[in-house]
Image (tube, rainbow, N blue to C red; front, side, top):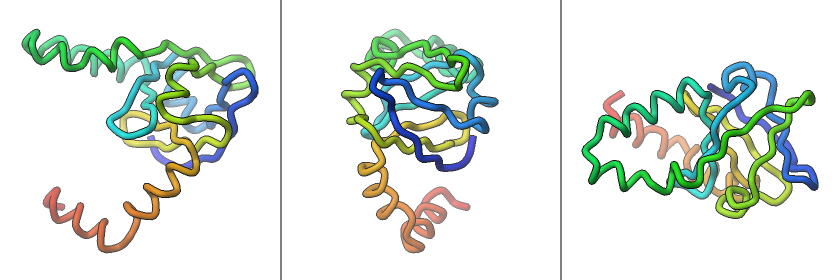
Length: 138
């Protein structure tokens, strides 16, 4: 998944999912917490891959993933391409109105637009991109 999209939550907590990402996420997808102050959305297929990977871990390590599963929500698109994002997940990511939706390879991220702007300004400097490419040996 790729791209950056600006959308707004409606007063019921529904978020329009961009058409390009809807095709990849599918009609039913999973949203959960992230290591950052945002949410991650996985297609059913990628959620299963994620879940299988956790299942392959020793139980002691599986327990560390508890928050991601405990707070995961199965989301379905309505006829207008919107998904209801549960209140507890909106609270975690600080989503109130303006939301930036990012494609991030095998998942999408849902960010409060102001929070994303701060992260974007740090992550998208030429110096940071060069440092990351070097660190990852690209």
